[in-house]
Length: 330
Image 1 (cartoon, rainbow, N blue to C red):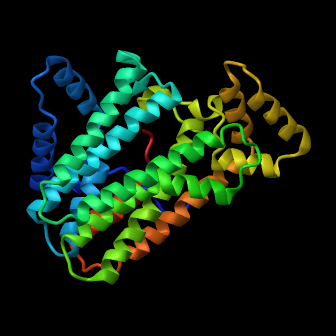
Image 2: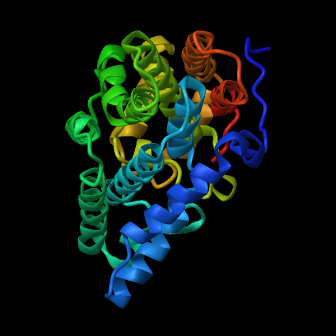
Image 3: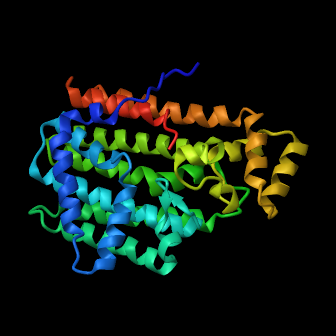
């Protein structure tokens, strides 16, 4: 049994403390992307399907409410972080040559890589335009620095494709930059615009960082163990793209020589079913549990950090959301 009993709550219940602010943020998102070009409107409508659970804007708003109270700036910032997040998804799908996202065709599948890259750029440019509407430029600097860090992480991952000697330190550096930096920024922005307490703001950034690390490890596990119909997106892309993730790294480091050699042969080959064969090998090893424990450890740290906040419905929602990361199947 795992130390944390993850449960899958109804998001509408978790988001109840910030429901009005989240709805307002969605409206700001739509209005910012409005265009007089019909093809752009259609593309933006399609991309809006990638909203999914709206975890990042919800994190920002819940942290804000738990730290001191929601302000109008938070609604704008929630729209900003969602634009940045969706832009990274669109660009990721190009890099991974993915066909499905949220049970719908990816932009690259629908319109080709050129259009997909431009749509991602369009979302990023609008996120900065929206940030510039705020009186304080602190958010713009945080979003700019975070966008830079995310790009660094993505480039590091591409540079390390097929690197079978990738270390755990390098892996954590990559996922910290490409995933955890954005969830950390969401929590930092929520706190910074709600309370004048630098120590608490830093703790919320740390909460977001631990949550983001756990989210990415779980996502990497899902790419191996998940069901594509249930996940609603292309799976098995990590193996096909030569990306070493935590469970596979652990397997290569701990498996008996013959199994390790067989795995390396599959990774260096071009069999269409190699990700299924790798998944079967990992399922019979301790490597899946090893990665799950790493995700759980980060969730335990995240939940512990939340104890610095006063008791509230929003803190309770944040705690449950953190535990929910471990149970996600999409």
